[in-house]
Image: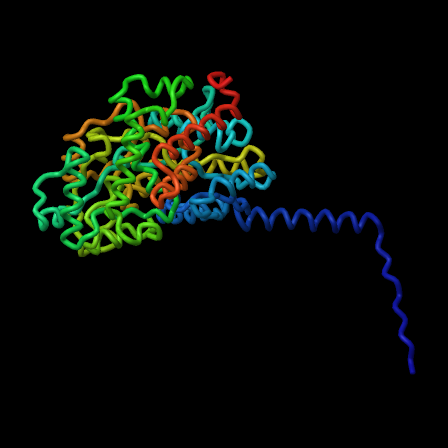
Length: 442
């Protein structure tokens, strides 16, 4: 049997070096030719439900096609979003871009943007954004967030079914709380649930109180300033107590229906299209978005009126909204800035308006709005409130939104009184203020 021996292959050092250089050069050429100008990066974007609209997901795909940068959306349920976000930020595992509600106290308390977010003041799109919205994302003169939202038709008001009102004999919208209760009782007597109130999400039912904040200020001028200076409390304000008592009354009269504790915000359009509910708190775009989802339901079938708690007739001015922040400790800050710049391009903003039923316009220049006749009539009839809603102009309110929701549920179920709910809000404001070293709270 013949034995085979392997003869060692002798290669000189200079040959090896040459081969390695050629291999490296060919790899570089292949990379450059294979994806010119593109980066294989994944940006994580963390947000609460309803903050990321479907048209934005389409734009994210367009962005990836142009840049090679993939957008990975991480959607966290609203009732524990801020807890999850804080945990991630504090543990050094934050997303590249995190969503949040703008508002100066939120920026300080919920996100600590001066430590956790990138200063975006010099980004080109800042000059195109509405100054009122920019102000809600600014701390100590620096802009930390990008808010792309409809802050103009986004007033939280009562959307009502005009056909149901006519059917039960209501000829005009209520302008006082007593009229609102009487109309709701008439609707309920006709076998229709007066108000769709989805409590299970943890946030929606809270709207009844802070959205009429301007009326609190209207009834007692200087209230906001006193609250921010720690010179008074909500629990000691008779108008605030009356407001919370009226909200509790709506629940206990059965106007929210028997399933309100389990009803979900995501079903709002479905329920309003069903004809089983007469009213809900929403914005001016609900009729259009309901028609888009259920074409047999006409947008013109709905109308609007202000939330009549405390006989309020003011529109809740609210330039704050879902906002994107870039995590300061992220490894893809440059790419994240590119994505925000991309979203703010006029053609992409217009795409969002044209393809998202819940947007009528956006808070940027260079876009074309799509107002309906009903929206225009409503906006010409009612006056936008000054000051802003309670959570925007009073410090340390918005950061405790979900906790307020829990207290209000406890009120509905008989575990707390309206005064105890207000006292809890005051207590949390104090805790947040002390933690923030607010000089008004020694």
